[in-house]
Length: 230
Image 1 (cartoon, rainbow, N blue to C red):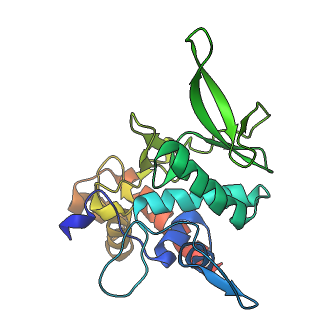
Image 2 (image 1 turned 30 degrees about the vertical axis):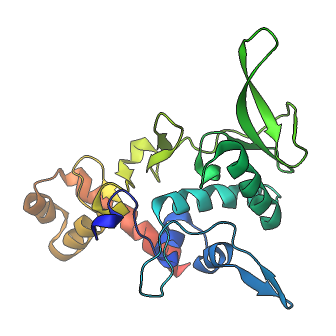
């Protein structure tokens, strides 16, 4: 399992709970699917492949799916998102370009934020329309990655599902990418299970964490279960 450290491992069901996206939709996007005899290729190749013939996502897949879903909800077809991914790979040289901090959309097209030098040598940010292959400026939606911590290359490294104030974090370098309570670094599933079994106060004592940490974990895991039930 050492190869999973820093990558994370999620089934479509686990990813669906975290992202509020149906596992069936995630599987269609990343495995491909057929409609009326026509096969549609995956939006991209999943980050993680194991030898058990099951389908898994890595942390970058999780972040890519999150952004792809927002693009599609904004009115773009999965086919246009797939085209954007292919073109962006050429521009950025990134295997998972959607989850970088350089994507924007206006609901019709997808733009890639790039740095260009003008005739004086001054660097300026511009938006490259990935479908028209020309530079233009348009009104764009608010940043999609405000709950994600990025490294100095603009790659996602941590995700705060409830925002940083929620104190729940998904970090592929810890607990194999399972949600953890940020202050204690204990997986939320562990704290929540202990809280349900022994009560929040006894669980806090057993794991030597603040009572608030157990209650946060219990609320978070309860919300995940309600998403499944819905």
